[in-house]
Amino acid sequence: MTLIADVSLRRILDSRGNGTVEAEVTTDSGGFGRAAAPSGASTGEYEAIELEPAEAIAKARELAVPRLVGEVFAGDQRGVDQALHGADGTDDFSKIGANSAVAISMAAAKAGADTQGIPLYQHLGGAFRGRNFPVPLGNVVGGGEHAADATHIQEFLAAPVGAPSVVDAVFANAAVHQEVHDILTGRDIAAGKGDEGAWAPSVDDAEAFEIVAEATERVEDEFGFEVRMGLDVAGAELYDADEGVYSYGERTRDTAAQIDYIADLVDEYDLVYVEDPLDENDYEAFADLTERVGAETLICGDDLFVTNTDRLAEGIEQGAANSILIKPNQIGTLTDAFDAIELAVENGYEPVVSHRSGETEDATIAHLAVATDAPFIKTGTVGGERTAKLNELIRIEDNA
Ligand SMILES: O=C(O)[C@@H](CO)OP(=O)(O)O
Ligand SMILES: [Mg+2]
Image (cartoon, rainbow, N blue to C red):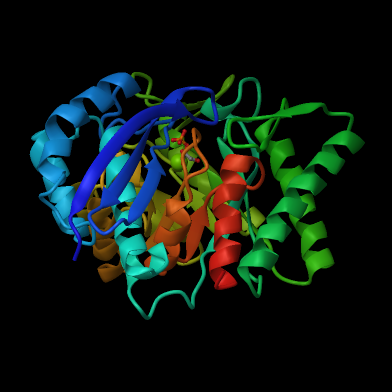
């Protein structure tokens, strides 16, 4: 094994034009890895802490780099991530920043793969991984925190569950995105794009359902395989804790009505995936909804679980959700993300690997999804920072 010889950090641009942290790890034998931290807009209350990039970099240089250089083997991912936790000393990375931590963790993994001359997914997942591929969930219409004056539900997702290959699935999602635009144009509705490249028309949620349902049906007919629909409701952003209601503009729903509403949507639109339908503090409501529709669809916890094994364990205990969103930057290291996936799988929860609304060209999550055999990956549909991951999946499938 080869020791980490150097760690360098710099501030680069993310897709929203904000600064983020990029890390480079070099090993004694000349192995190299580079990775960058993404950033959320609809962040969960319990996520690890992202610091201002300059501060995160300064703190990581002072506290973490000396614990890594000449000390830890690049291929020893648990060793790297333990060093990051040791350097930080808090349980939410508030000292060195989860943005520095995750960039270093992912760059070290890439350097570890490079020293062995193997793809990252194989380094992370082992020799037997790389045969199964995740279904990409593609954001085609959206609003919420990702676009002003658009839908209340944050993401309407295309889910090409019947696709025979990743490349077919990726192109099906792009086709749904284009069909949505055609339908909008046909209805004389102008639309820009939100932070993740989804169309952000000024329509109500009911019309968005109609449009996306029509677009997925057209693509199903054209491509000849099943394309379903999913949602990220981002319920915590709609929830008003003082009033105890979910606000959809003028219209509000209390928790019981919200559960009924989501259960009806699952039936009406045959939803294959529903993320964060309820508030991030309401395990009980998640459990009620899972009891009602969990046999038909995935109820996924994003802000609910924040890739955190303690929060997931609580969910398992209560029967809340049957799926967990995995975002390495919510928890700070690849080790923590892997532990969350393992706990999920042991307990029958499906792991769904995900991008953030603020992204870079970094494609680590494509490898993470293949390495862990995740059934789904949520990583957008169009836009360079989204296609970076989608095209990487195509390359992995092609053994390129
Ligand atoms: O809510 C989400 O799932 C994500 C990504 O789609 O958004 P953000 O990165 O803004 O939290
Ligand atoms: Mg979400």
